[in-house]
Image (tube, rainbow, N blue to C red; front, side):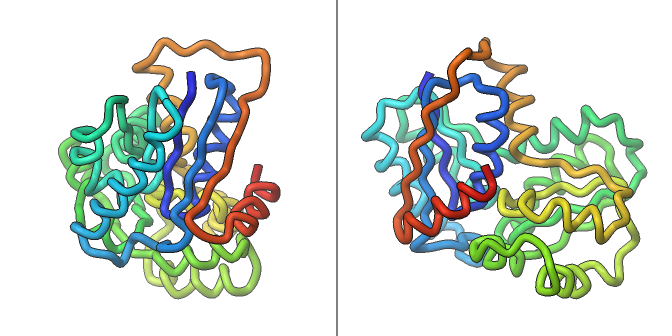
Length: 245
């Protein structure tokens, strides 16, 4: 099988890392829209338009399945993308919610959702969790982490200061939903900040769990062939890929 992974920038490489580790696919085509990252502050119609343009890019590769690693795209553009594609297009919000439910966390434990403004405003995560009975949810727009990750800054003073800015007034959560694929790249820094107390719900591992539950996939002997494309600064994206993968 050949799979595509689409993200607004470098963050979707965190999903690619999980896919490579489980080795279900012959080939992975990654496309980051680095010319227009981040998607989080943009309006719904713009997000849908950019997503459909990315779909046109993937139509050149005869893929079997497309994962929209971007949570913002998953929140707004999946119906439009599926309507215009001849292969399934999967998002990461439903798998993330499924992964939290599978963690067997008590329904009254504190859950923190970190995401971009657009994802938070969509209420896709909040509504799904409330429907499952979770009652202690904090939703934070934490978009400042996106440009840090795009610059390859995963730890250090800038990341710590940004965490202080966002998290200084909240109680330590039992679980953190990393509602943007950029955020797993600062996962170690997050765990250090919260003294390793919460569990992290990671889009990459969640989508692998979802794929295993819904598709008949077999592990391969040979490593997948990974091809990386970007709308701007391909060299910069590949540099991050070399570091992260």
